[in-house]
Image (cartoon, rainbow, N blue to C red; front, side, top):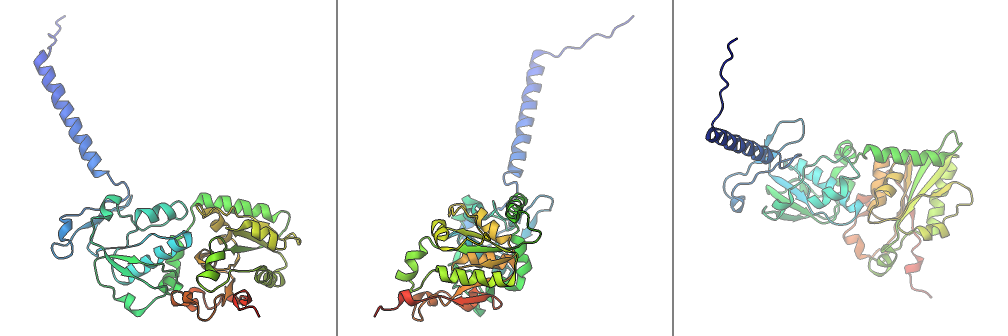
Length: 355
């Protein structure tokens, strides 16, 4: 039987083939790496030094499952300062003002690291290597909405300040609530914890209680001519809900939990000191009171945001500064507390001269 002669490659030909194959593989690998450097978004900048006055820069925003689209509306961002309540206020204000002025909002990496582990936020992130290359125009905001904020000029604007007022974003409330949707695992853990507090009760009305202390204990009287909540305020606020809901239980979180345990009457069996008071990782405490039905807050943006997200009844500490407090120049109570919220006036006697 005739067998065809086996053809053998010469050694030089084999070497050439191997070199060609290696070059082809390397080229393909580099191409894929280039296209996938930013898996969630990609931003390209050309001629950064001439951004404001010359060719319009093309910003590309890609998310999984959606095509790349050119964003010619510029890039707006906001400073990332303060703790959780401040970060949420800055995010929501950026979201609303950028949309109102027809620009694309981006958040800084620091804000993404703070909020993304807790919430399903959707705004894209400015790559850290580009933050310092973009010619931002800083635009300072005070703590409530003003007409001029509807007409902010500039394609590359960085909002600054500590904005946290519903007057910026309440007109798109549902969108903001959607942005601050908790991750599923946080919701599951929180609901499981609250279910344990319920015990054998058939029905329960959960009241989240946030007691802001920490640095405010000294800052309020010594800098702002104000007070923090005392035990009488908390007792009045809790009695309001006790009279209204026979099945109320109170879930207390605070950055001064020892003070709470000493000053909040828990003898009725309806008070649970649930928070861990960790200011460096406040997500758990915030999730606990944000999953309740109603809110008791004292002072600070942490409690304000809890009341806003919960959407039930919110009791807050009202008139907690003297009329000549410098705090009132940077904070407008009517723009911080929603009209339907219930204010209980603070006891200012510790600030008055002693006779």
